[in-house]
Image 1: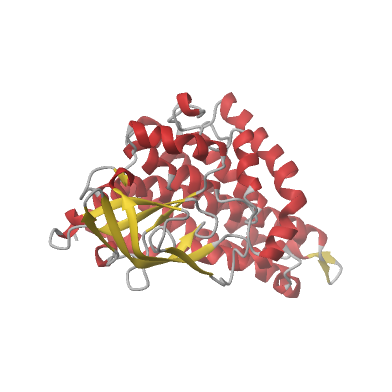
Image 2: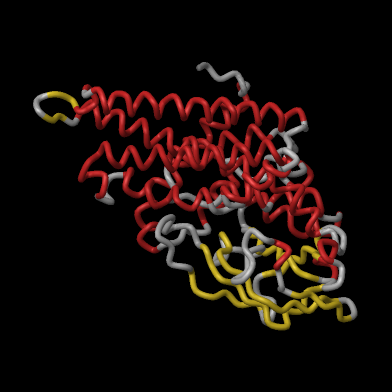
Length: 380
């Protein structure tokens, strides 16, 4: 179906994104995958192409646009390319909005120019060794001491945990206040007591730096409180829908590219003297996947319309997140099968996509949590 969600300016950004990937990522992708980390220079280059901070204030070098369709264009093109890329969705879609919506004027002047230029890489630290989807189980503590907060605790599975210059740490600042006892404190690289553990050895996404972070009596100035004290949990809930929509977009368009390459493989590969795609079972499989992906794409476009209108709900984002990621996982699994033995070889993208997609049904809230959110909304 013809897409009508994007205007000419969005397609201009798409062309810029493609140029960035071809010129600034392609020459280094193998090196980054081998070294298991994307070089920081990739973020600075992205800033020069206008791929970071287009949704941040113009006075600090940003684009001044609240149009999430720009975020979606970048997410689509990065997903089509593959996963040896800088984590711009984290910079733009996940962490950036916390700074944009919560930073005061002094913080904006201090942090925004670097974030927008790509010189400052950001991360958010929610998950702990004993607290994943249940954010209420977070134990990392923040105790006020004069003009500072003293943070103690550990976080794990933190995306951009190695490269990050600024880490938004979800901290329990009032143990007796329940959900109202969480605050967001920004820890800066180099603060005493802030250490990074190992770069986690994941089964997929080798170039994405996911790490453990440790905080031992880290003294954080009160000026680094992001938003209001005690408002952390509410602030997290406000930003999660856009994060989940971004994940859905990456999943469905990454799977679409895997399907496209598989379709071509099925046209080229022959068995018993015929292209394997001509066999009825394989033809039906490809037809089913094409249909399922298009249904996902259509729902994403509806969600994008809702974002632009300002009325995307957490329920709608949860539906997009679980359905698109589970569909992508299923599609890529079938694409491996259609490749036969070659689908098990890492020299084929489909093999790498198979392990890379697996995290999508987990991060940003598991499929089970998404269904729980939707089910509760049904009054069950």
